Image (cartoon, rainbow, N blue to C red; front, side):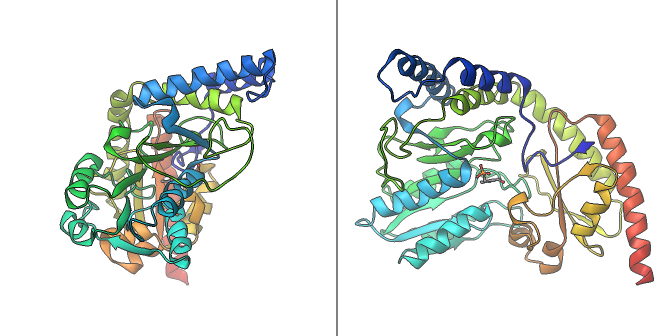
Length: 378
Ligand code: PLP
């Protein structure tokens, strides 16, 4: 098997799995219980939270565990909008967000909030002049994805935050950092709120977190008992939290070394695929190398994906969460519906080998030739 869909999800690393199993076996108490088993579980959980907060240099109380990035995005947008209704009803998002953000915006619009979509430049960079123009006295929140999941476009969050605060010091900046964590360095202090998830960084599925600066007010979306965290009540998932802490620690090591290696793999793929007449490379200078998006001008991306699958090669069309639709990100970059209607995403990891890339390119050629021929016979 050649797995080239690391941006959809990653295999759980052995060390992370081991932490999960140990925490499950040896720490069965409910951390909300008062007896010694509960106290033992709570101590383990607290040390995992401390590790995470130390890595990101934030307060432990600024971290809320969620079921993943989708839930973190929901809390970030809906929770802050509901808590800040007296200040306004306007929010701004980019055109390079994960589909979950657009679904949340649709919901917020249905309950009376107003959403503006900030333009980007041709390379994907947020159009700072448009952002300035859109910020109003009643703008509660701006949400900008750190790294776009389809194309790898990376935004300069620190600079964006400075622009926002200059226009309106009360406006908050949220960033979905799901595709940035573990691939490039992330800094929670560049934003007021951030969402990340474990399963993109070789951790388990079912856990993510929301960073919320302590000054930000937020309305919970869930109510219940077990007040370990007011924003996500109930029994904390101690083994998942422990495994997540381990995954974060491992993923934030050696980032530069891994990025350099992945860039070389990316260059190799681009140099080969750009020779095909029916392939367009959807990449700009601000894309991270871990995500490579291409358009197939004459072949349906889904057909190509399944043809590659016959060689046990796994890639994706758009994002895993929205397969089948046109690529909003490619549309935002090139404004070309045809180009955005048949896209493949090849996502690379430090686990990817040069041998895998060579085999992928050889199979790609076979599939391309076969499907182009079939197309001509149509
Ligand atoms: N945000 C981004 C940028 C993503 O790439 C994804 C997953 O594809 C999500 C959010 C959703 O994450 P989760 O599966 O943890 O809910």
